[in-house]
Length: 333
Image 1 (cartoon, rainbow, N blue to C red):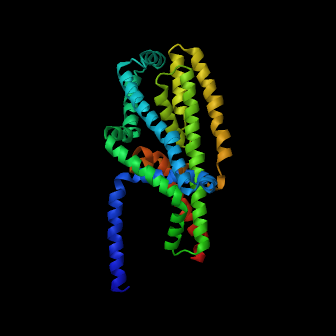
Image 2: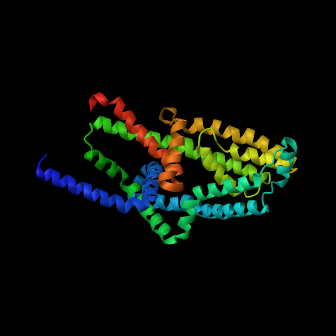
Image 3: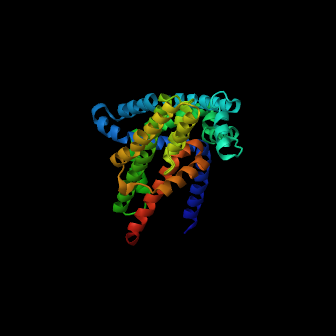
């Protein structure tokens, strides 16, 4: 390596670090824009020839605000308020009073229990962990506004010029053209499988389970729906962690009919959601192993905060795609 190449490499490294530091506070918004643009790429290909690339990108970005971002903000505020009510209600026994349940358990087992205190502690810990990023963003409205504006502008340009960006990255790559194409296809298939097979199914399962809580009179159903959506992303765990204790609580509280109805609803309706939806939307060859999803969820939350619940598995899926292409084409490199 000569001095000129060395100087350029040092300059590129320094500027890359500077760019990374500038983007670090908005990493979640950047990844959100990439995911949103990925979702919108097919509609853009369909309508850009009819109304033009600029108009198509603008219309799709505007639609994402109306159909996704604005509703999520409204739901986020409502869930945060509901979460505060849940914590307050548990601590004061106004919403969830487990004293009668504790007495029945004590009479059966002869052991003193503190379900009220343990539930309050668990809900507080979950709320601070899962909703902490949302609450902080709402407290710092300026940062949220800047971040969302950045994400929307970036989404517009990624939708409009995403194909050119992929071609530019290919030009930078030193990989053979065939391997580049396989890498892009593999990453697209895996990302699509994670979005549809885990995130979409989790949202649907959590929402359906939440509807059952609301129908059968479980307090603060919106907050518990949010909890079930998150838990449904994690394999094996799922929404049953919420609706089964809710049915037991209703039964021990004397609401036997509601308890039985919620149990049947959970076993039949909620239980069939995963079995019906997942085979319809997932390409099994591109799907991630459940253990990888767990690692992606936990690691994503630790790195990106609440948004990491969704971004973590996608990043891990991209990592899997790169490894797969590398192993399958090692001899050709």
